[in-house]
Length: 292
Figure (tube, one colour):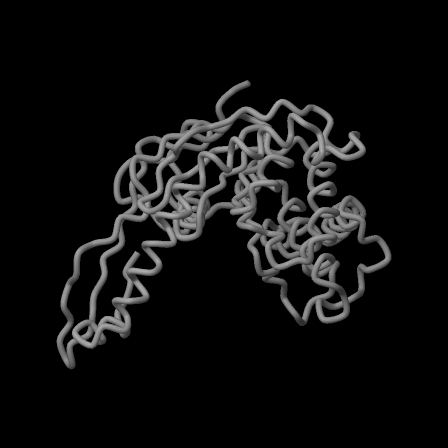
């Protein structure tokens, strides 16, 4: 398989300032990502898992072109990513739907931005609404459908304008367990039908092993790729209870063994940050500004 995305020695540093009355003081820069190297193949389902605060979402922002690396580069089909583009679709944890638009109008949005004629736009939107299992809900507004349905609309909207890569930032984190498992299976079905390259961010170990062909495990901040694991399951949706499969349990344990020390480090980092915020000598930091 050919390489679709190549992440080469990527680092991301944020400059921090704190307010001192009418003055601002530059503090020590914070390194969010450090020497990230990762290859994603054409049509691959790659999952990136790591502890809270490790830079997973920062990495996805870089892939989307919403921000730029401090050093290193990210290539898509051999060309550097320099900004947002319709060759990449993004699905966030929050549904980010237009509340004044129906399901159909939300899915048509990207097609309209590409200048697709109205008739063709409608036909494509309806086909993707059907693909995500929402036929019959074309004329419903976001407030009239469930959280799981909203996320299906967001996925359909991202797929409808035919991006080459689908970027997903913990898209099922806000859903209840039953809906989450249902949508995980649905996402695998959609991936098999569309053959899209998917990069999926999560902090859920079981979700990572269930969805990914490969799982990249990240360290605590500054985030690095600790290890990339191959996941051998070929027909996840066809197995009655994959999560109880001994090989699945073994892989889940292997990911946890890689992660547990990083989770502890991340918790210590968060604890130190919380204590700093209550330190009277550092209280002015609470009004700080992050420039990314």
